[in-house]
Each structure stands twice: as C-alpha cells, then as structure tokens.
Amino acid sequence: MTEMSNHNEDGNTVPDSKDQMVTGSAWMTAGSIFSRILGAVYIIPWGIWFGSYFFQGNALYGKGYNIYSFFLIAAIAGIPSAIAKQVAHYNAMNEYGVGFRLYKHGFILAALTGLVCAALLYFGAPMFDGGDARVVPVLHSLAWAVLIIPVMSLSRGFFQGYQQMAPSAISQFVEQLARVAYMLGSAFIIMRVLHGSWVTAVSQSTFAACVGAIAGTLTLAWYYLKNRPTFNSLVANSKNEIVVPAKQLYQEILQQALPFIVLGAGITIFQLIDQYTFFNFMRGTGITSTVMLNNLFAMFSVNANKLIMIIVSLSSALAITVVPLLSEAYTRNDREDISHQLTNAMLLFAFVMIPSALGMAAIAHPLNIIFYGTSHKDLATAVLAFSAFVSIMLGLFSVTSAIMQGVSQNKRAVRYFAVGTIVKLALQWPCIHYMGVFGPLVATTLGFLVANILILNWLNKSFGVDFPAISKKVNGVLAFSLLMCGVAYLLVQLVSHLLATFMVVDSRVGSLIVVVIAVGIAGYLYVYLVLRTRLADTVLGDRMRRLRTMLHIK
View 1 (spheres, one colour):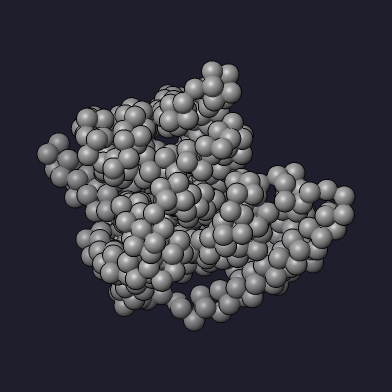
View 2 (tube, one colour; view 1 turned 120 degrees about the vertical axis):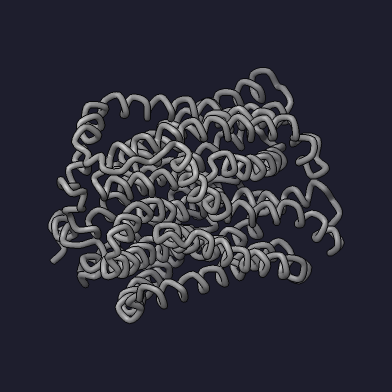
C-alpha cells in the first residue's frame, strides 16, 4: 500500500501530483485496456459460433446492453466516484475515520439502489423492449448483475480515494475474464452442442455480467482483507476532530452522487437516443427491412462502438484518476495546483487518445474483418474509421466531466451536458435523413463537441488552463500521430498487396498479419518520435529516460 504513505500526519500530499496522476492512470489504463481488449476479442469465437445469426445476435446484445448500462449507472448512482472524492477529501484533512464511515454508509446505499434498479429492470423489461420482445429475456438476465455491481463499484471508489488504483484495475480485469469465459462457454454449448435458440444464447451471454461481477467483488474483498491492518492504523491515527452525523454523510454522498448519474451515463444516454430513434428515422429514408436495419444498427452502435470504447477507456481511466487528486487540491484551495493538474490532464489525454484514434482509423479495414468478418465489409470499415474519430470527443467528455466533478461543479457540468444533449436531439433526424448510418455518429460528435467547449471555457475562466503550452505540445502529438497514421495506412495497403499473392487477405488470419505488422511498425515510429524529441518527457516526466535507454534511443 505504498500510495497510502503519500499522506503525512497533517494529511497533506507529499509526492508530486503529476507523478500520482501518471501512476494512477497507468494502473487504471492497464486494467481498463486489458478488460476492453478481452471484451472485444471474445467477439471472434462468439461470432463464429453464432454463424448466420451473428449480426442479429450482436444487435440484440447491444439493445439489451444499452438499456442495462443506463440502469446500472442509475443503480451505481455515481456513488463510487462520489465516495472516492469524499474519502480523498477527508483523507487530505487526516480524518480517515470519517472517510471509513462514509464508505460503510455508502455500502448500504449501493446495496439498496442495486436492489431497486434490478427490480425495475426485471419487472419493467416489457416496457423497455422498444417493440422487440426478444429484448425482454436479455434484460431479465442482466438484472442480476445490476443487483451486485453497485457494491463492487463502491468498493473500487473507496480504494481510489486512497489513490490505490491497483485493486480497482485488477478486479476489473478479473471481472471481465470471468464474464468472457462464461459467455464463450455458454454460447458454444447452446449454439454448437445443443443447437439451441440464438436468443437463448444471447440471454446467457448477457447473464455473464453477473458471473463477472461476483468474481470482481471477491477480488476486492481479498484486497480489503489483505490491507485491513493498514486501514485500521490510519483510522486509529486520525485527528478525529470532525464528527459527522450519519444523516449528513448520506446527504454528502447523494449530493455528490446524483450529478454523477447523468454525467456517468452521458455516452449511454446518447446511445439510447440512437437506439430509440434510429429505426423509425431510417424507415423514413425508405429502408424498411428489419434485418437490414438491425445490421446497420449493429455496425455503428455495437460493432464499432465495442472497438472504439477500447481507446475511449484510455481517457476514462485518466478521468477516474483525476477526481480524487483534484478534490484534494480543491480542499486545500490550491488554485495553482488545480491549474497545473488541468494542464497535465489535457496533455495526458491528447498524448494517448489522438494516436490511438488515428491509428484505429488507419487499420479499420483489417481490424473490422478480424472481429466481424467480411459481411458488409466496405460499409462496416467506413463506419469503424469514422467512429474512431468520434471517439476523441467521447474520451474528451469523460475527462472534462470528471474534472468538473473534481472541482465540485457537478451541477454546472450537468447543465452543459444537457445543452449537448439538446444539440444531439435537434440534429438526430436531419443527420440520419441525409447521412444514413453515419448520421447518429455526426449528431453525437456535435453534441459532445458543444458540451466540451462549454466545460473547457468555464475551466479556463475559473482556474486558467495553460492553452499555449498545451497547444504547442498537442501540435507535436498531432503531427507525430498523423505521420504514424499515414505510415500505418500505407503498410496496410502494401502488406495486403504482398500477402494477396499467396493467401486470402480478407480473412481473419490474413487481416491479423496485416494489423500486427502495421501496428508494430507504425506504433514504434510514434514511440520513437515522442521519445527522441523528448515530447514524452514533458507529458509523462523523467521516467521516460529509462524507457529511452531500454529502447536504445538517444
């Protein structure tokens, strides 16, 4: 528990906040990325076992999961992030005992919200099916996960309040590992052994969320028991000058948590808007085939979304790390540190998000074939490439909204998000009417663009964001990313042409070879450039010196 020693007797943070942010981000990014990769890779065997029902099954899976995601966020109620923020707040005051009581009361709240939301999802499933009765059993299976996950997420928030990111990251990975194992096992047995219904297979695949939640919760329980002596020692040596009644603790949790529901559900709310408008709006363009509409919906809302969320999770991991660090600086009223951390957050976001998004766009064709086969490959590739650019706006909102929460501007952030949502709703019909399957993505981009501009403008006025320094470094990141993107695209074309002489390139194996070569060479080029020019040092600190030595870069 090395991070816990980062507080002295007065509760002040000892190490540089930039180092804390980078270290915390590394753990959260690793956990999130590995989890997202697992959550995407499973689709390959899963799709093979579903055969001709693959796109239909994936569309059904997506419909159920979008609704489930909203209920889950409502059940979690932002309590984990609120707990992380408030625990960090009291820890900064050396009042560990209050933070510990906050966690216990939050545990009760999380259990209650999980129970209520699970019941609503289970018994209210027919009201949320959007006219597709096959969604009902899927929602029934997902309700069990809603029952468990709030408590698990709350415990992650508690560890994050201590700047302990490893338990959260590892439990996240274990959760995903158990979920994917159950998904694949149940899909194989139902579709290949029993030759059963694809709807039943989808329902069992979604029930895997419950299996994963149990595994993740057990992992956190192990970490808690392992570190309980340290927790007890911190509580015993607290100042204990503040006495906070239970009623006030609940009020603090709810005041912090409720705005987190809206902001945490931001991307999901936009996806639900797509789910409940896309089919009717597309029918207005003349496409009436349910199968075709489901295929199109699967392309942009499920297939592409599953892959871009891998890179969005990079910024989401950063966002989770930012909240307690900003809360501590805000508690100390250290405006200089707040401004410094805002600059660091923006730079770190650009450093990882821009090359990831451009790189995914460059390899969209072989990447799409690896995961989703050759069905509608040209359109699906275009949708994935466009979605990769959209992911920058989604990731930026994850960071900016988390920053607003960290400086106790939750309500203002919700208002700005509401403006972005209005923009999304206003543009949804014309965008779909004139741009078809790309329409929802364009409307989403513009909606989040407006919300991000409003938030960044307020942050700059209130705390001062060093935009000149940021823009100079971001321009370097963008230049290197564009160069990497161009090289990756050329490598895809060149390697595909060379492989075509002795194998089928548009196969999963051929596409995998293309992706590995393109990502390996282009990715190394980006790493070399940012290390050689010392750009990485200005963002990630002196620790890049060791990496430069390992890679023999001067």
